[in-house]
Length: 378
Image (cartoon, rainbow, N blue to C red; front, side):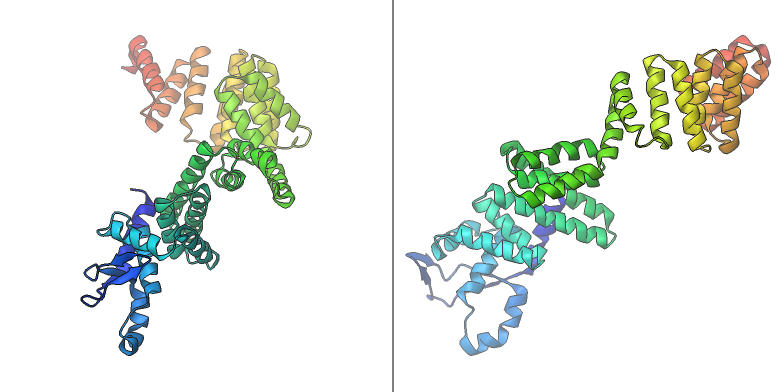
């Protein structure tokens, strides 16, 4: 059960039931409401009308209709639901428009509970792409309310449900541009910038509103850097180094002082097989961010790959001055020491790496090799 189901199901508690007087059947356009049928009324409305009941000795049909819509939104499988649905349709042949309009009015008044319940009733009984979209907007608004109240888990859950509905709408209606517009902001919130860009570009394709298009163009411009960096990470993870280099090189003129772009260019060029250019970019990244241990580690590996073992050991040692608990640099420096025949120092570093991260299988295996080949370490 999603958080929205749980949230709205609980609203059944806000309903009370009234009974018509015996033999006081109500006729609605040839449909007879049996006097034995308990009729739902929203509790707060019932309480406010108690004095009126004394005077008129009745509850208005309008209150009963409102109660039915509210109840069906909370639990459409509620006992007597079939009879309640018949009452609604007998009450007004355009009851779908009535419910939809009430749901919109409640949303505009920021009455999220009632709007959500009305849209749930509408979507269950009639359904439309617009009904699903606006219900997603109710859930989005509920998520913002939860975030404001610092209820982060609930906020995320409501937003996930909203996102899921918007995506389902587009699966069935791929030209419904309002969903693209809203989903772009959802993806941006999730820091899924590639999806945000692709989604907003659909707004430019399908939407006819020039103001909304201008807003989307501004958003696209604002996420261009994040979009490019996410795309680069994707290309690097797929070993497509040439595409990563292409994107990063286009960013360099504007972001020359961005250490991360230089760092990623180092990663991309090393993967592409140009170790010397990788070293140049790693060193540029280190000049811009001299305390970043990730850069030291990757620069040291690049020196290692270029057979400059002493240079690699020096780089790892400098990195450890900033973080003496980085198991990667202890391990890599240890391998460097082993390569130049300083077994004691190599064993010491690899042992240290194993202590810091005993779960790393590669480190454990290297330590076992040392113990098996050098009696002094058994």
